[in-house]
Amino acid sequence: MGEIPKADESGDLWQAPRPLKGGSPLGSPGHTDSPCPDPLTTCHVGIPAPREHYGVRERGHDEVFVPLLPDEALPPYTFVPGQAPHPESDPAGHSFGHSRGPATIDVNDWHHCRVYLRGIDLFNAGFRWESHVEFESLWLACGRRGPMADYFKAWVKLAAAGVKHREGMGDGVKSHAARAAELLRGVVEAHGNSSFLGFDLAELIRFADTIHQAGWPARSPVVLPRMPDETC
Image 1: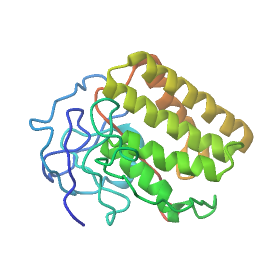
Image 2: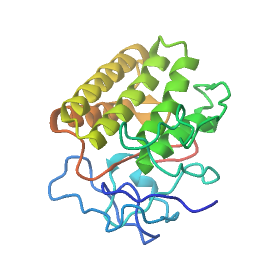
Image 3: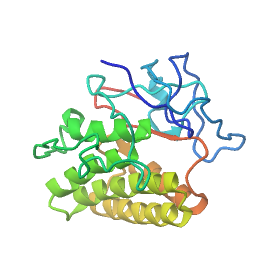
């Protein structure tokens, strides 16, 4: 795998691999954002989080980004409207001319769905516009309706909240998060089980509710699914 580009001011990526220290639950006191000294510094893969850190949490201060798909390089930049070329419609965009195949996912084999895992990787690395593209393709593949589609639409909304944060639009952050929480509650009601595609839906709902109430967290969020072969 090549180098991972772009450390940013929100702690999404770090300057170089360092020993991982555990993150704190979202909303815990005492965490403030510490800007990366060089927002354009190249970053590298580091040490995986311990298994007990799967779920939703804030990024640890000395933690580095570790992808679920290490063979997939990250884009050279994350798109923020008005601040960079549109990735797909601008000839200078990082995905201009890129052809995407149809997305598919099997609820019983989700951990092999590269589109899903890629969306999570991009979200965790701070490429939230790009992550919404992956989740949106799964929403479309699910026919835009039903619990599975609503689950991916909730991820689209969470990613959109992250984009609004980059744009400095606090109201947009909160409204997208509120819609994500609403969609996830519908999934719980329809699915009848809090565990879904590697996540505890109740935990995702708390995550969305926290953003709705308090805005984007000071420390960047990390969301990691529990794979089927991982035990508590």
